[in-house]
Amino acid sequence: MRADQGIQSGGAIHWLLQRVTGICLVVLIAVHTVIAHYTVPQGGLSYEWVASRMAYPLWKLFYLLFLLLCIYHGLNGIWMITQDYVHKGGWRVAILGALLMLGLLMASLGGLTIIPFGIRA
Amino acid sequence: MRYRWDLGFVAWLLMRVSGVLIVLFLLMHLFVLSHLGLGKEAFEGFFFVRLADQPINKLLELGLIGCLIFHGLNGIRICLVDFAGGVFVQKKLFWAAMGTGAAIFVAAAIPILSHL
Image 1 (cartoon, chains in turn purple, yellow):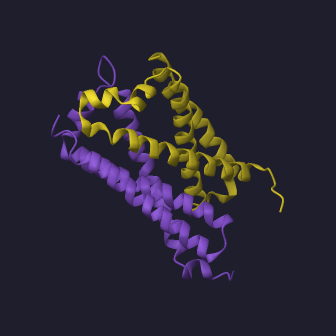
Image 2 (cartoon, one colour):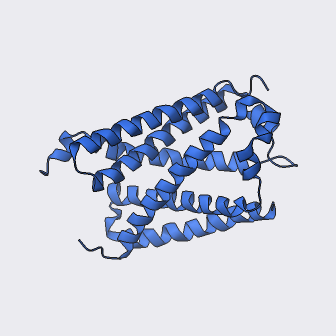
Image 3 (cartoon, chains in turn yellow, green):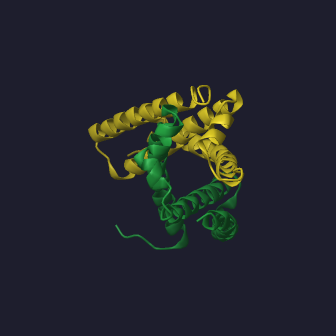
């Protein structure tokens, strides 16, 4: 592999984005874990409590952003790990395809949970 | 090829291991929470939700926050190394991250274990 291939293949932007999304996720995950697990009302975590928070559009936006950044950062990380061990072009394309499908599935699963939740409750 | 087990390599390896574990957790988390839309009774009766309420899962929860704290703080260290000249103090930064992480872990573990 030539030294200049990294940037030509488009890998550099994902290397940079992995760091940018990572810093954002440190903030988002701190908010998420503290709010969702350490500020619970008396009686513990309940369905109603989660639903009441998720009724607010701003929380929906927060969680949609959180979801998309998690999916990108997580699957990009898996992609970068596999690139260290898988060198054949065909296998790389197969892995990329599988990760894109998984990302789409996770975005659908999460999005379809976040967007309507809280309205019906 | 042989690996040298120095601090930078261990940090790199733990970053990968914790990252993969967090992705596996995220898949489970999304799967379980996708049942929220079924309504309160159906959700709380769901097999995996009842499984998550078992006391043994407090230990898994500690493992999860351990992975998150390590991955996040070591990630900040990586950014400092890559963008802020931290490469010359990368080992000191590692121990600073671990010290901060240990304090956050203890602070997070107390409420988790006290709800047992």
